[in-house]
Image (cartoon, rainbow, N blue to C red):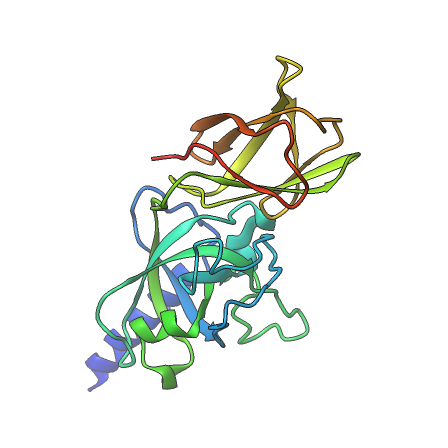
Length: 252
């Protein structure tokens, strides 16, 4: 019995050590340890302005296959759009199999509760939709240890560019991004110029510029965290409008 207890203790210590790691780079396919819990589903497709800027997750193609990330993984919104494979690990509450989810929101820390708050740094944590959690674990568990890895995002159709703002300030929400999914750089170009204009991240996957581009067709260059770039030329026609959504090319 003493030997069995020692083995169990060693497993728990190893899991805690891995979960506390601040290394979130798992794009090479290696598995890392974390924990996962869930929130109530929004099965009606309600509009939700999360920390990534996505609105109606159903209309935008994400559905319930989504997750909020803890502080250590969210990286100030730079990880929005990344895709993960997650499996329950080393507990009686696990179900077989894995799930694929997209990072669409932030699980905020609670520094007034330094212990047992899974979203506080440096912990790796996924706050899943309830339906996703129940695919990998028994509902009653509430929270379970998991292993995860970054995977390519498989999308239908091209990247979507939703243009918001006003004539003096253009804000573009980018979603339905394939490949590694998370954007690190974005440029815009109007049809009256051959020069690309550097955009800056406003929040999540909202990118902004104060360039006057009204009345011009718009092109975009999108670069993801693996250094790959996709260019979409003249995806928004010259008569584009604020609130419009325009489809470009995508990563494969």
